[in-house]
Image (cartoon, rainbow over all chains, first blue to last red):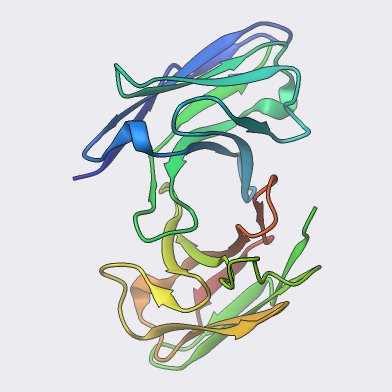
Length: 117
Length: 113
């Protein structure tokens, strides 16, 4: 069955960097666009970034543009989110998700990132 | 960006009674391919959101048929024909027509009276 398992979260100081990973299985990863979404404590979901199946196209929310980078390694079935210059407002559960538009949607359980000094 | 506005934000419902949530978008969600990319999600505490419906009214696998979606253009509705205890939580609408960015509604919290 489809699995998306995030890792790499933790406590990070403001201004520092963190890299999140999302390991995918159970579907054709290399043919799927994938998204990062986040949810701050007590808030609704917020879309963060999207990458096309071959990595040639990437899209970012204005709130993270220039600071976060989405990438993927299709040989490892893994998605990444490089988070630089993190801010307190980046504190959230970060999840990877596939296929919002179509019939094969899946949303991972997420990894918690806490930005605090 | 497309703004998604849900109402009500809080919805107390008696078990076995129907419930309805409205979602309005700031512009039409009809895409150039003729589809309307409007999703509904349900989130229980401590869990990731689970998609219930996509393209306005198509139920995801395993979703009970007491959940239904309707609407067109900018006005959409999620209906639960008879609320059960497991339906408590927060419901979100989300549009995937005009992206980036994908945008979500503020959420509607359903509770049992």
